Length: 210
Image (cartoon, rainbow, N blue to C red; front, side, top):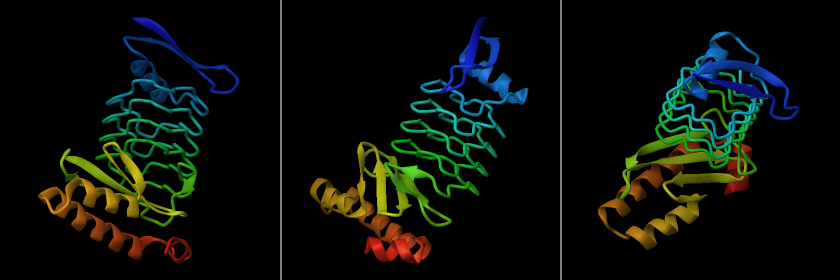
């Protein structure tokens, strides 16, 4: 058993100290004891599969954190810094992500039912609408998820090593896959994303993105 300390991301003040096999054990214990982890510094922490249901992680620094498969149901991640965090397969059902920074976060296969993403940011763009994230997959040559984000600057897409606009993705698919089975599959996915954006992007953002 080792002793781990969770500190405030700005002041360095100790928020929680505990013993466990890993930092993950201590973070789970802190959540279970209702410790105040707002503004906690958990950057690059390995929290894969952690049971963090209902955790208060407002404004926490989770940049680069490994949260694959974590249970974050109803967790409060408002304003959290999740840049580059691995949230693949994480359960974020009912989680609060208002104003969170999701730039470069990996959300493939994450469960986002009823998650509140209002005001969340992605590379400086604000997510908009009541359904700002659409996932399709596994799909394509890498059998990965294609994730579409509705933002105030238009539609952005992320899959494997690609991150860019819908138009950039369309061109990349034609150049890389042509009329192959993957190319045709991606073309169908693009049509679905366009339909989703037409239905769910707020009128003002849709007008500006056109």
